[in-house]
Length: 275
Image (cartoon, rainbow, N blue to C red; front, side, top):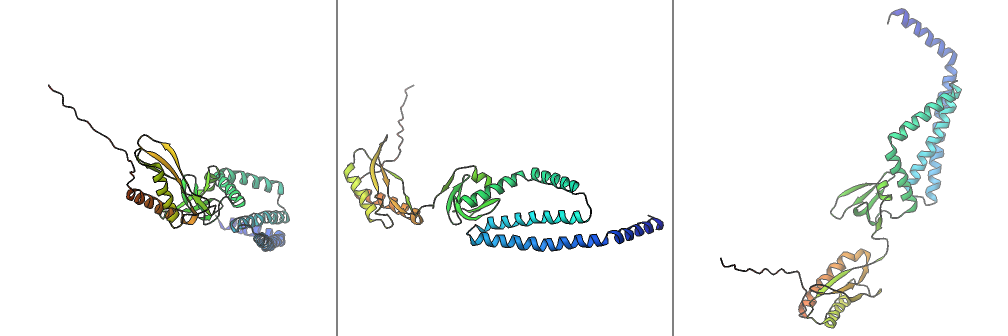
């Protein structure tokens, strides 16, 4: 680029600034003041929503929506003051929005699912849940993913769209939980004696609730055993501890009473074929 071209461009720039400098300054001032006002309004909206008990994640998301909606208005006002054609500006904005929407459609699906999860609250932080084939304790409910902490100390991030589109099991939603067991005894053993033994174990095991009443009943005449359905109740937080104690207690008590617990056996018979 030669000296004459540079001088000409410099002259045109000075002329443009002389003509439009004030408008440019006012447009920048509109952007600055608009940004401050939009930020304060969005912050006030979030504070108001949180005072009404809205989830922090959702209130933060709505704060961002309000802020950017106001900033679009500010940008349009600034562009209008500069003499730009708003029709072209809106067309460009719509095209950009469509392109961005198509590029992040999966994220939008996760985002909308996250909002629904926060509003409907099928589970909260600290609940043990089974979602999308994963079991764990909820650590965080984000707008795009939910973080679970599994019993074997893994951190699992599950997309919210997968959660909302599948069956959700909230394991710790209720204060009490039923323990479902099947205990088999031999056909030659005394059913009434076995029932008494099992009931005594349930009555003496720490953590087994008296109400609701535990169920001990014949549930099936299987191929090699008479199966009892054993269903005691415990507090949800004590479920696994009580379950293990009941199983151990029943095994020891049945052994002590001389009642057999059948297990699968295979008899192999060898025949000698004379040549």
